[in-house]
Structure formats: structure tokens, C-alpha cells
Amino acid sequence: MTSPLLLPYDGPHLTLPNRIAMAPMTRGRADDVTGVPHPLTAEYYAQRAAAGLIVTEGIWPTVLGKGGPGIPGLVTDAQVDGWHAVTEGVHAAGGTIFAQLWHVGRMTHPLNLPDGAAPVAPSPVRIEGEPIYTNQGNLAHVTPRAMTTAEAEATIADFAAEARNAVRAGFDGVEVHGANGYLIQQFLAENTNRRTDRFGGSRAGRLRFALDVVEAVAAEIGPGRVGLRISPHNPENEIAEEDPQGTYRALVDAVDPLGLAYLHVIERGAYGALADLRPRWSGTLIGNFNGTEPTSQRAGEQVLAAGLADLFSYGRLFISNPDLPARFATGAPLNAHVPGLVYGGDAEGYTDYPALGDRVGSAVRSLS
Image (cartoon, rainbow, N blue to C red; front, side, top):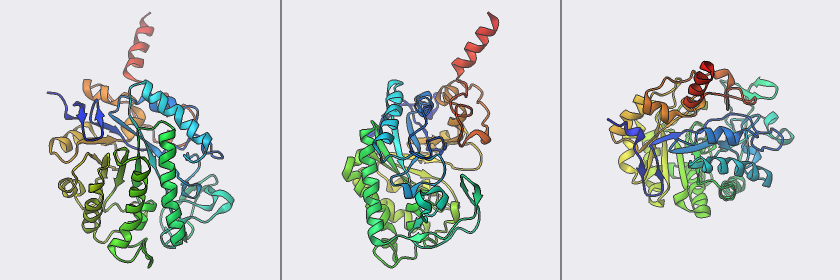
């Protein structure tokens, strides 16, 4: 019996050879000064083009949204050119690739920003726990500066401009990152949004920034090229949502009529987001389990078989297994993941994980 993950998908805006998505994952290998992708980035994504859909690592729409060393941008012509090489490689290999638009908000440090700028956020609420990584190692977070209303509106325009640049770079679409405690979720959550302007206060106010970003991006490049990623009730990066069900039902109800390419839902916390939101979403839905361990093939199959999602995304397994769909199809063993090689560096732990053909080729060579 064929795994549901390996069946083709023909949705309203996506026609894909299988239902396995490569989740966005930070790799930290861009030029830290220019924000241009590493020369090996094109090879890295092309190696994984057998995924039904690739979503890139997060890419900043403004340098104030840069979360750490080696995070790429999609603002300058040089950055656009760098990403164009990536999309060309993926398309030549038969793949589909979306760019993730990512502003970290308070999840950065002055050492990661130009001229030692203070991080910006909906409200001046500091992260007290885990440190933030910088070029000088792990440091304590600083208190972010609250964005003015005009700055919030300008940031919405930055997202739209980044989407336009993504199309220039040859991406098939974009994913707006509204998850994992970054800027958009900081606007959604009660503990990080204490504003009294139109971007805060009531639930409708807290939803406003997320909705404005999605609507602006959709208006710029067309809703069929836009995905949205959310992680309801996810405590990551010290987010505390008092009523995740109410917040995300309202968000999905407002976004669904736009006709987006997909909704990408990370299942975290006690709130069963996939089961609750699936009936409210009329388009393509991507499920994800962003736990501490790599998610198994079986987990994705169960989600699809239950009708909770149309596609399922894998992160860590794609880092170490560039040909993950082939391994799922054949039952081949998986390469071991090396956590210490995830961030920064060059080819090691990036483009040197072997594919099945590489392993066969090595065996043939050893016999000759």
C-alpha cells in the first residue's frame, strides 16, 4: 500500500508530486555583512528538490528583523541575485520552492543589528530566560523598543516588498512566518502585546498586524502564491497565549476567504490546533510537529490519513537526508542528524549528507 505521503497532490494553487514538504530551517550560512546566501545554498536546496514543496529558511524583510549571524535577507539586488541562483537550481531539479518571510522582532540583539540598534517589538517586554546567540556568543536579551504605529505600518510594507523581491528571485511563492514567538506572534500574544493603538488592546487589535501583513503580501504577488505559518499555543521564546483557540479561530476565519496557497500549522502545546482548525480552513493545510526530536514517517502518515492535513512538513530529517521521499518510499535507513553542524560553517553538515545513490556509488567503487 502506497504511503499517503507519497501520493501526488493537486490543490487549488499547488500541484505537487508528493505530500512531503521541507519545513523552513535556519542554517546561518549567509554572508553576515551583505546578507547574501552562501554559494552552497543553491546546491543545498537543489539536493532536496524531490520534496513536494520546499520552504526556505527564514529571510528578513528589513535588517531590523535579522535574528542572528548568517541570516540571509531578500532586500538588496545582491540578495535577490543570490536567491535567484537557488530557485534556478531547484527548478532545474524539478522542485517547487517558497521563500519564508521572517521578522524576529524582540528575538535578536544589538550585536546582530546595524549600528547596535535596539530590537523592535510590539511592546517593551524582555525575554528573561534563554540567551540569544550573537557573534560574541550567547548573551542575555535586552529590552526591545516598542514599535510606533508608523513603524508597524512600515514593516508591513517591508513584508510586501520582500514578497515582490521573492518573485523577482524566481520563487514560486512565499510563506509569512507567524509562528514560534517571532514578530507576528508577538503581536498575537497577550503577554507580548500591551499596545493601545490599532495593533493592540482587543483580540481584533492583536490580530490586526498579522492580517495586514498577509493582506499586503497577497495584494503584492497574488494570494495563490502566499502561505501563512502559525503555531497556536506554542510557548517557544516565552510566548503565553491566554486563549489560543479564540485567537486562532478568529485569525483563520479572517484569512480563509483570501484564498491563500496554504496554511502551515505547527502542532504544539495542549491546544489541538490541527483538529480544531482543519474544519475552518477551506484550502491546502500543511501539518507539522515541531518537537525536540525528528518527526517520523509514521507520524506524518497518521495526520494525512486522519484528514487533518493535506501535506506534512519535515525539518531535521531533511537536513540529514536530502532524498527523504526516496527513503520513505523504499524503507531505506536514515542518515544520522548531527546537531552541532546545523548552524554556520560550510559544506560539512550542509551539502555533504549522502543520498542513496551516493551510498550505492560508494559501494560499487569499493568493489572495483
